[in-house]
Image 1 (cartoon, rainbow, N blue to C red):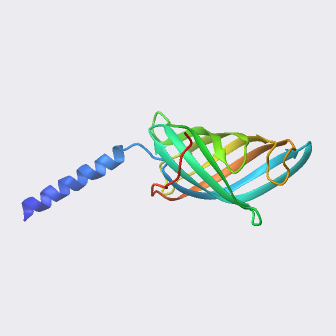
Image 2: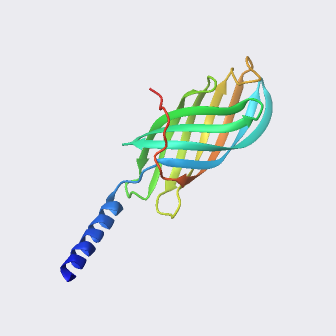
Image 3: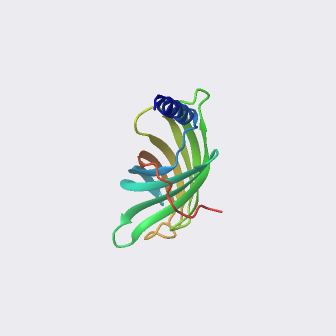
Length: 166
């Protein structure tokens, strides 16, 4: 019995050590908010919305699927993104970028993900974006330029299911 207890304890220590050495993963579901300053044909405005992002990390690549209820009458706006992330040399922070690759309407968007610490009990990140489109639903044909801020907090580490960009 003592031998089994020692073996079980050794396996537990080895498993715990293996988890500690595993690289950080962005994979999961995040809830948060984005706020944007907007110029529409030269007229300034701003807005903000809650939204959800699913992320799957493979190596240093991340794929995102984002969704927000922009206008209840128009349904949910969706976007997919692809980019890369990297750990700091010490392994205690991660950062990266993603760019829009598919969604509800055509636009260009580049997202800079700020360095975020990986040592807390919960993980979250912040980002800045630059967005440009002439196909925003409801104002098609008008040039829309936005600068947005994201604030996201991971609510699940389960692997989400969505179709990434090719």
